[in-house]
Amino acid sequence: MSARLALRSAALGYLLLLVGVPVVLVFYRTFEDGLAPVVDTLTDPGFLHALWLSVIITLIAVPANTVFGILAAMVLVRDRVPGKRILNVLIDLPFALSPVVVGLALVLVYSRAGWFGEWFEANGIRVIFAVPGMVLATIFVSLPFVVREVVPVLREVGQEQEEAAWTLGASSFATFWRVTLPAIRWGVTYGVVLTTARCLGEFGAVSVVSGRIEGRTETLTLHVQNSFENFDRVGAYTASVVLALLAVLTLLAMNLFRRKEPTHGDRRPAGH
Amino acid sequence: MAARPETLRLPRATGVSGRWFARGFTAGYLGLIVLIPIAAVIWRSADEGLSGFWDAVSNPASVATLKLTFLVSLAVVLVNVVFGTLIAWVLVRDDFRGKSFVNSLIDLPFALPTIVAGLTLLALYGPSSPIGVNVAYTRVAILLALLFVTLPFVVRSVQPVLLELDREMEEAAASLGARPFAIFRHIVLPSLSPAIISGSALGFARAIGEFGSVVLISGNIPFKTEVASVNIFNRIQSDDPTSAAAMSVVLLVISFLTLFLLDALGRWRTRHER
Image 1: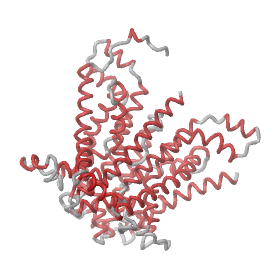
Image 2: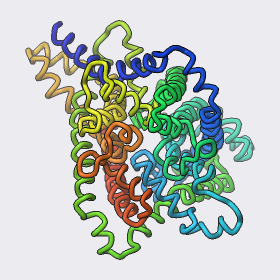
Image 3: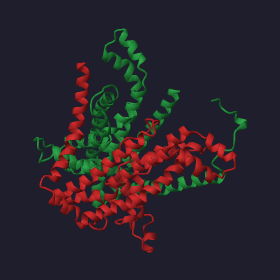
Image 4: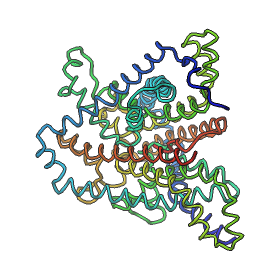
């Protein structure tokens, strides 16, 4: 079976050169000069604020997109509305659109010269170069994940149990809460994991709307870039390793929840 | 299970109020988060008229950046078609120690933030490369970054199809004396091609708009290594949102075209599977 071995070596060699070795090297480089500089970075107020801001933004964006994701999936699967095809494509748009365009779009709507800029300014709310704009950008880029995970599950579980509950007199909310939601919970969980990963890792859109003010509008990913550009190599590598560890946690969660959903079709958008 | 006759259809379990709530919330949320901002980009791109739009996207710098982005993304598609299919094949049909680890590794580029991906590649293929390969600030670096972030697309799209593929046909062909490559070419590949196309189309759209992984490693040299996203970013930074919007519209059109193609392909596949 030498052909088999050749194919295996080609596949593994490609993965090793593209992913394996670079990732290991970043870990090595981080700890190259010992633990002290790493600890210095981890206790640096700039780093801590960036981590905190990333977490806060994620904590707002994930619940918002989870509620939207479940409701949008209900509309796509259970409802009959015209223009479903357009709806489908619009929901997928954040997958296919450059994050920089997303950032620009928000600037054009919410900056001082933008469509709603005057209104927000008159009311003393800053959106661009502030946290609200960063939240909006993060919500935009991570919008499709829950929808795309829940749609196939919702289709799979069918409508019989919902109809039974309904004929037995349950209200539509009770039907949803006690029948539909428990049936799709693993799909929702998987979608939440993917959304969380995307939110923590968002860079391009947030970079445009944040203004990158250290200690104020700098997320962890922006902190990586700033440290790198300021020749703080260990700082950039350490923040990267923290993000990489979060990525590994995501992978573990993905493996855990994927097993509970053996029916995942190929509609699952890998990547992004 | 027999289909229920249409006349006996029960009222649908999401009551009228619930249905309208879901519809209203979905439309409102999508409008506020996605539609209004996208409309603002299109509106702004026409700020200086159609000729202004044309000037912004057809000047030599714009053409160079669009051409580079398009060609590199095309190269990414070609490599992904070959290696994505190969990796999916090895993960499904081959067996070796550590296979499940390798399988999870495929998702790493998805879970890893793009800026970290860029930094990671720079560590191995940058100025301080331990193996002496320095491609930083070249087009090869852009290709590497895009290959990294698009790795999962074709693999994850082909894998489930390959898993469900009936092997009887292949065994029949083999027993009739077909060589392994002929079996792959004439029996396996036709079943995989829709999955390969949809995976690489998603990867293409992703490559066209990629920013984070490219920004550190490409050097962003105009006319040489500046991709479309970086170009738009620089135009925003230099306070030229109108031309940034014009370039964005070009990317938007490519995104929508890709998504409609994928939608049509998805419909075609469900029709032909049943």
